[in-house]
Structures are given as structure tokens and as C-alpha cells.
Amino acid sequence: MRRIAIALVLIITVLFITTGCGKNASDNAIIQEDKGKLKIFTSFYPMYFITEQIAQDKAEIINMIPAGVEPHDWEPTLKMMAQLQESDIFIYNGAGMETWTESVIKNMDASRTEIVEASKGIELIRGEEDEDDDHGDYDPHVWVSPMNLKKQALNVLNALIEKDSSNEEYYRANYDKLAARLDELDNDIREAVKGFKTNIIITSHEAFGYFAKEYGLKQIPIRGISPQQEVSTKKLGEIVEICRENNIRYIFAEKFVNPNYSKTIANEIGGEVLTLNAAHGLTKEEMDSGVDYITIMYENLENLKKALQ
Image (cartoon, rainbow, N blue to C red; front, side, top):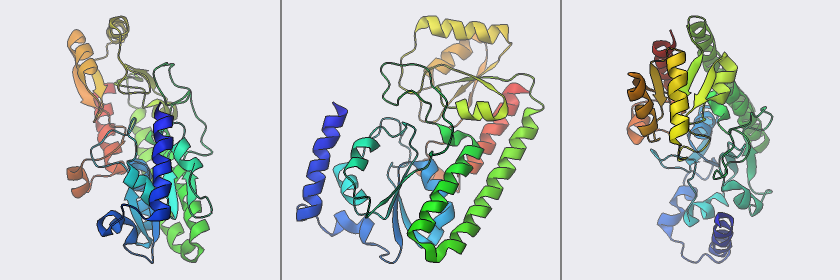
């Protein structure tokens, strides 16, 4: 049903573009500014972060998902898709994260817009089976591993150079700075893990598989890939038993995800809920205060130290 709806919206989008019906100055403001710069659309925050870090003032970068919105089941508006058709580069995570992209990309002009699946080349891991989940067989949260995000940033770098070779040196220098920050973060996490007394993390949903794989942790998710998944009493009871058997006192919850299941388990074991942020997105207040992917991951590291040391 969702694919049919997207297809209908795309037909209308084409009419908007080819006939100009319904357009006015305010509708087009986002794509008429800075005509000398690349127009880049990113699907959600981690893609925006790496693109902004590399392109900086050489591009107008539009993050499609609004601040503070959970991205798993978000879909673009008609207006947004019309603007996307006129972009120079479209960067998305892929791996099944953005369920709306398949139909949208089929109708985009590849000769006009460079389409970048940032997770291309990264070895995917399988997620838990959930018949009600549209995200596919694999865990799409590749960016939660800083080393995976570094690989995604390299894919973005290559796309920028392909589209704008005259600024290659500028883009490469910015990529090198970002890569150095990610390497430092990776090293700090590896050093901290050496002091952990347990490697088990109970997460609110299956978002930290790549992080766990990278740093030798074992993720036990309450929900599957979808943060909206309902959880049975039986599964909650099984996780409570795991916590008791392994003397686990801290349960993790995420921003933008209902923490009730995490709180329920924490109450059963007399424990505490801590935040483990998958960096899906930022609130406007966080953006204004300078929070970014790197600072989020360092906040996560402090909570991991509290829970596992």
C-alpha cells in the first residue's frame, strides 16, 4: 500500500515539475538559493553530518527529515520530492533504512542527480526477523560504528569529487579532518572497552549491532529493527532473567523511542535507565548548541562506562 501511495505522489510530482503548477517563490526558495553551489539533499542526520563536514560552504545541504523526528517510518512530502528531483546530489544511508527511497529513485533523473547510497561497500549484518517490519533482512544502522561512518564519508567524498572535481583538494582536506576525528573517537572507545567488566548491553531496539560488533560487545535488543515493534510479556521476562543472571543493573533507551519497555525491565531488576543514542537525529536545540555525531558518541561512551565498568 505504501509503494502505491509513493507512486501516486511521484506522478503528481512529475506534473509539478513539468508544468510548474502550484509553484511559487516560497515553494522554490530551498532550491533557488546559492545558485553557484551544489544542491545536496541528505535523507537524515548522519548523512547530513558527514556531507556538511566534507562539503561545508561549497554546497547548500538540505536534510530532508526535520529536527527531532524519528526517521524509521518517515516519508517525504510532495513538495520535498519535487525539490529532490532538481538536486545535484542525493545522499541516503541505504541498507533498507529509508523504506521510501526505492520508488523515489526509480523516478529520478540519474543524469541530473548523483544518487549516493552511503552504506555501499559495508558488510551488512542480519537483523532479528519481524514480519511487520519494512526495513528488510539486514540491520540498516551502519553509522553507529564510527569506522562505518568513516567509510560512508569516503563514499560521499567520492561523489562530491565526481560532481565537482574543481574543488577536489578542498573536499579531501575536509574529509581528512573528519576521518581524524572519527579515528580518535574509535581509539577512545577501544581503550574504554578494555576496562569493561561485562560486554552485554540491553538496548531499546536493534540499533547497535554494528557498534557491538566493532567493539566486542553483545547487544540484546528489546525490540527488533523497528522501534515501534510491540514486545511480548514472554520476551520481557526472558530479558529480565538475562539481567539477573549477569548482574546487569542498567538498561538503555534511545532518544525519540518510547522508553516504557526499558523502564519496565529496569523496575523489575531494581536498575536504572541510561541513554544510548543511535544518532538518528538532533533536536533544534541540540543543533543550535553545537551537538553533533561525535559529541553524541562521547556521551554514549560515558554511559557505557557507567553501565559496564
